[in-house]
Image 1 (tube, rainbow, N blue to C red):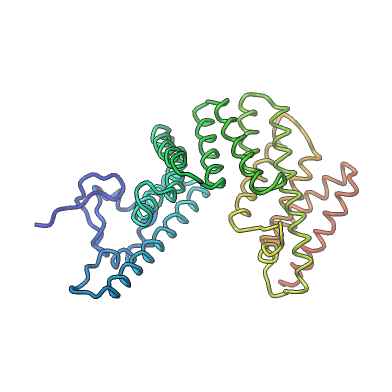
Image 2 (image 1 turned 90 degrees about the horizontal axis):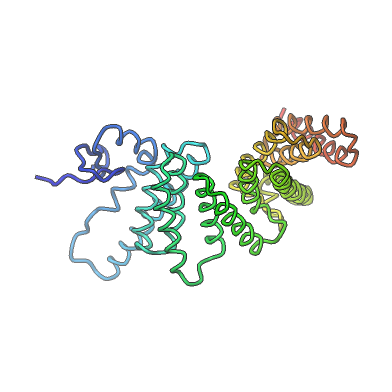
Length: 357
């Protein structure tokens, strides 16, 4: 009789098995459904070739080819699982992200080994998922494993160190350890800025979360200055990106606006970065509009930045809607120079909208 496997999600004795791939087991229907929605639907048939046994004897060349193909399939599944987990986390669905995050860790271990530094992103994703699900104890275990790997890896990249400090900062903030949270977030900003420059928009997340920590402590002036820093970084970055897009538009008219901005030196608007901006800027705007510190000038700058981001993402109706709000506000404040820049953006948006009709 075939020995049953372990549940894909919790490791308990599996009494159910996927009827398609016949490889994955589950302790309960709820875990099977959660895994299917979370990641298994995407990788079910991809799993089969990773477990196929080969006929013997094989030549050295055939064994090498099999090993290469197996590694290629494992990396494909790893990439799909990591992307799926990140997508669900960004959508605010940490519970649904757990199966994909666990799958990413499992295949990362198969590809790189149990203590490799390449496992850190998977551990950090699992920490984020656990924190989002309110399981701070499990999040702490994943963070400890990540920190141990980073500290024991000579020459670990600055980017990975910054990412670790980011997640440590958010964890400390979640459990109310504000001093430690600020320590880790400031380290994230330092490492990111040392790597990418003082004006890098990639540091904006660190500033945003530091502002939230100060806001929670009712230190509103400090929080306000940090929220302003977030808006400033994005406003400057998007202005540079927009100017670069306009310079490249005539030379490469067939490219999308986002692609044109990606091709500009020092103004790269990747899809991941755009998603981050679309998360941070509306949050800052909400604080500007509803918070205790009213800074209409800062709100106008945030609206301008958000309109530029929607424009570069080719969401022209939304860009026009936000741009009009920005223009109305700067006209009320008599900020003529800002008004000219926003008016120019609205003209660009109108030309794009007319082309789509």
